[in-house]
Amino acid sequence: MRRSHGCQRGVGLPLRRPGNPVETDHEEVHQATGMIMVHLGVDPPDALARLRAHAFSHGKTVTEAAFDVIAGRIRFHD
Image 1 (cartoon, rainbow, N blue to C red):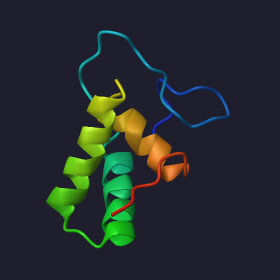
Image 2: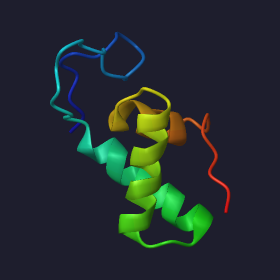
Image 3: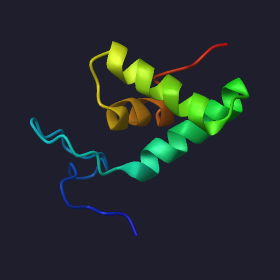
Image 4: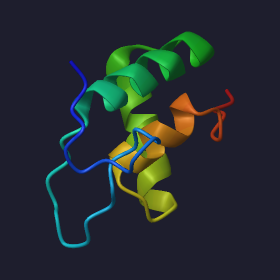
């Protein structure tokens, strides 16, 4: 069941809440990690490390970067 609390109406993406350090969208992070694994042929820890590195280097949370991967806005290359 998809949570709708804290989501923009009709979009399904959580609202960014400044000062909230807790990342609650683990499903999206797992999905993006899996997509990176398949695309690059790497294991889960390496895929997650790439996602985290991208998020850090672009000033985003891991969840925000995961949404970008799922939406096809981020492409990882070997």
